[in-house]
Length: 159
Image 1: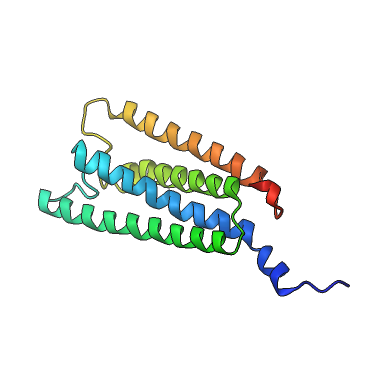
Image 2 (image 1 turned 30 degrees about the vertical axis):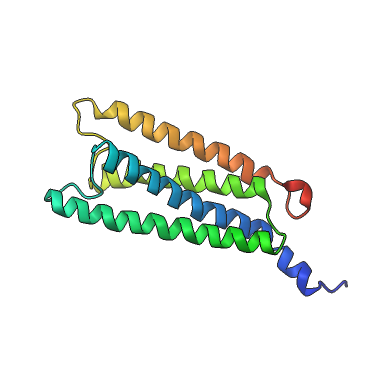
């Protein structure tokens, strides 16, 4: 029976680390994009719209902090993968898209519909916005899954 070296054992974790690094970055990036564009620039909603505008702004602040922690955490893992020469770019990008799509679908279904924290936009025909939001999320997830899981484990040819 062949004994794996310490480096071989570590390198076998690289595909999973690439996926999780990308996933964390994707969640953070799409949350940041949502907060910057839909909350701040377009003023469509706040993270929590069931109270005063001040409470909504405070909730946006917490949401913004969460997005930056996730983004920076994902980038720290990315930098570590590069330093260890374990970066599998296609798998990482697949993770980014998976994280972004899953977060967007979670936001559109759980936060918008189940918890009713806010709507995408407060208009008469909100279902159109919901349809576009959630369909986009599913498409991003499918593309991410194709990239992440079709990338070969190990070898540099996966980049």
